[in-house]
Length: 228
Ligand code: BJW
Image (cartoon, rainbow, N blue to C red; front, side, top):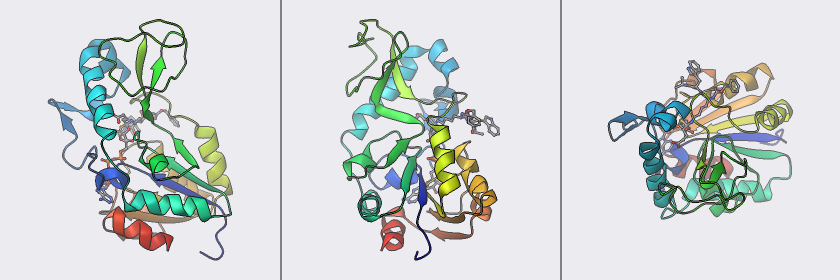
């Protein structure tokens, strides 16, 4: 990596799989007879808020029992030691990158441990359930929803992500199927900008052909080996 100074790392559910957090598409993405595409939408929330809130309450509770794995720890070490620019853009809504010690993390699809108040637009830290419609600690309205980017909603901080890609020398995609846009398009954006690209994934992703290099295997082995 001698000629590399600025790095953008995209992570997906595969990086947390070995911590015991289910991925979306490996097992069919089913939960209570719904595909994630049918549960994680504003329309689903309007149609059946109890179903959607239970889905997220269950997962918010579960992630708090999980621990970072060797892939999270290797990325945190790289973040601590890398002197150039580095940005971990994660599609994951868990907090395992941060709990491993990473600082330069951007959650483009939101965070389980935040709620979003639809009345006052605040995003209070939230570790408990939302199903009982608790009051927003800022404005008192019972208008909290998960702070999660659903299908059809705009992912967060896209300007910062594209600015980082423009400055990058290396783009690394870890543990993501390449099925969900705009993240799935970052490898093409990077290629167009002349950025070197590397995939680290259990198996070839949908976009694997776009990468300059692809290595396949579990993130807990591939990521530490790449970081060393
Ligand atoms: C391992 C491993 C191990 C396993 N080690 N690896 C038609 C064409 C193009 C686009 C669209 C279209 N129709 C609609 C769209 C847009 C839509 C979209 O992409 N839909 C697709 C289904 C086609 N996207 C949107 O709506 C987004 N918004 C948007 O586009 O706004 C407009 C816009 C345009 C241009 C610029 C900017 C904005 C919003 C997307 C929101 C995604 N939200 C979710 C749900 C979050 C809530 C929740 O958690 O419930 O985010 S969907 C879900 O998928 C979640 C994930 O972050 C995301 C990506 O999944 P990920 O991480 O890749 O997981 P998996 O399961 O798919 O893959 C895991 C991988 O790991 C696999 O490859 C395994 O092999 C691997 N793996 N174990 C290493 N141990």
